[in-house]
Image 1 (tube, rainbow, N blue to C red):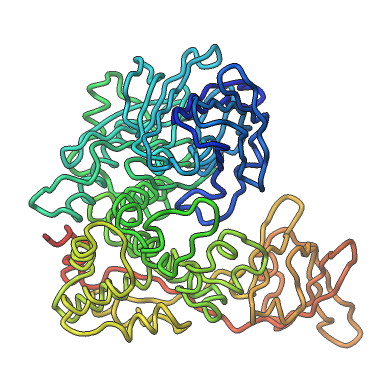
Image 2 (cartoon, rainbow, N blue to C red; image 1 turned 45 degrees about the horizontal axis):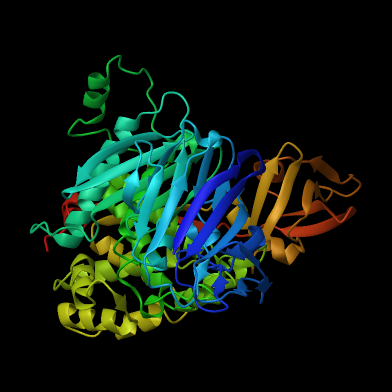
Length: 607
């Protein structure tokens, strides 16, 4: 199979794709995936495919659509078959494809048809230049065969799976490189704007990569399971996200979160020197750049944990339908545990900042009523129909396998450390060895835990993963040297609401199960216009106020125990009597005993 991808019309957001099949089957069938591995939702990529036609020699052939994403060509098997089509691309996410006059990006799952019966054969990809791409460059994890200085030309994938796992970035991007673990790493960023401190991004990312390679491969410095690695990032006004691949990752960040020079050094050498000091200033947990580094750490850790060590159900992807597994709490949750932890171990944040990030995760889970309804194993299985299909009731019906899975990892790690036989670090490495960096089952994890921990941890996983019981973290955190404090939860959480605030006022996004707002009768979509208070004494009049922010409600209430929320719903004005709730608490984690924290938060344990 050989694909040629070109920019057909950047202003119309159209890629042109040619697929040449050298040895087609008679009446060859082709198919476009309905999802992309790592993003567990049927996305129906075929909706953007148009003008599909086929030729064999000089003969135009009939193409019949069989269903939403499969086609059959009326061809013979004695001559090469060529298909031509276009793909509309205007999704700036990491999951599909995008094209305009400034840049292009695509995953093969959005552009490249599967030739049924020949998926395991080598797949060539030619990225063809055009007038629209005159000053563009190419970045991809695919193996280059014959490319020009800008990266246009021919690439090779061993099979369709590899082609699907190597996205392509094209455009006028910033590019830098570094070495980690003896492997060349490249970082490209589109949309950076002025004042971008690329050297700092490279230096901080290198620290993360070195730390994670050492975690998986230890002081023996075994080679990582990839020959090179590519970070592709698009800096946008308000985007955020990432998608892991076998030797690359696609990232989106907010432009404001990029590191920037306050006063740029004049020379390139001075910029490098300023960015590569041995002890960079620790970041705050609330910094946007800290969030970005956590995303980078998360996606890089996936190179081992989900792209290679992966659920047995993902041994071979089925691109035509949902691929269910109950193990996303491990592959996404444990990765979420380690992403911020590696920022601490790499020296990019301090103990206090790390504990703030842990507290944020703990509070997020505790403030989600759905945790009492759905286990994290169920949440993993239901990802296709619930986690990726967010609505106003999602927090009441589901729990995140990212956040609760991270708490499972944290509690398991602290339990193992307290018992003194092993750590989760050692468990992860032993699991990698046991499964040979390939498919695994929950039983593999239990076996490794029993072997290294010297007892069965089945009761813990049954309670923390397969039931809706809360995870007993507080005692374990205190034992590890963390001081646990409590403070009033944010007002929205106390009222049982999630809202958006703007110039026009307050809009209710979610009403949380069992909260004061639900008891008052508020509903998602309500515009909260004002508050009304009963007369303070007989003969007095009611007191009503217009509000634009939630904090104004608490200010106007004073010491009064009840109020009436004045809301607009479907153009009707409603009164919702609201009893002010008892103050609820959120957790704050601070450094208690630094000496007890060091073995956990310091350098990773040696393998």
